Length: 278
Image 1 (cartoon, helix red, strand yellow):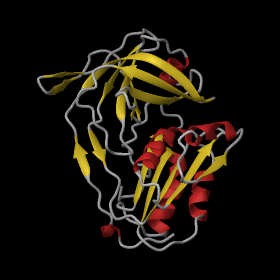
Image 2 (tube, helix red, strand yellow):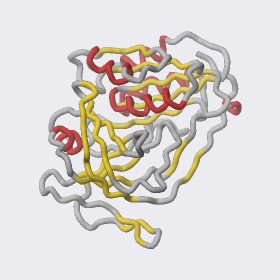
Image 3 (cartoon, one colour):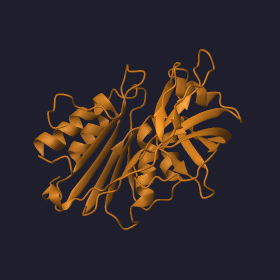
C-alpha cells in the first residue's frame, strides 16, 4: 500500500484532568472462551475518553497478600503508594448507563490480572486511573487499517464504533480460533474482519499479522495504520510500513500492548528500539 504525504493527516491530542477512581465489581460475563467483561461501579463524574485507543491504568490487589495499593490525588497532585503496586493498562468501555467496563483476556494464572479476572466476585475492588489523555482518530484519512491480537480487540471495537459506517476500513485480527471471532461479531459492524487463526501456536510467536499486513494490495490516497498486540511480533510489520513503504509516524500508530517474558510491559515503550525515529 502507498500513502500520500502524511501532512494530510491531522492528529489532535486532548489532555484530561487527573483522576483516580475506586471501583467495585457489579457484574461480569464471558464474551468468548478467553475474554471476560467486568462491569464496575464507582465515581464516574468527569470521566471522558474520546480517543479510540485510550487506556486507563487499573490497580489490582497483590495476588500474594490481597492488599490493593493505588495512588491518590491530593490537592491536584498524584500521591503514590508506599507498598507493592500491581497495575496494568486496559481499554475503557463505557455503557449507556455510565458504567465502566473492562475486557480482560483470561489465560489462567500466568499474570495477576488474568488470575484476578478468572476468580472475580461481586463486590471486588479495583482502582482505575485516567485516561490522562486522548489521541483522537486522525482527520484526513481516506482509509484505515486496524490490526492486532486479542489484547487489541477492545480498542478495535472502539475504532469501529467511532468511525463512520461508510468509512473504508480493513481489519486484521490474530486470534487462537473461531471461538474468538464472537467478540467483534457481536458488534454488528458493517466493516468486514479478516481473522488469522494461530491454532496451537503460543500468542505472540507467529508472523501472521506481519504477513497479512505485507500482503495487502497497494492503494491510493492517505491511509492510516493502527497496530497493537505483542510488542516483538509487531516489529516486522512496523519495519515494513516505516522502512520499506517509507511511511512516517503520522501514518503509522504501533503499540506493544504486551511483551512475551515481561511481567509488566509498558505499552508506551518503543516497539522497535533500534529505530531512531520512534
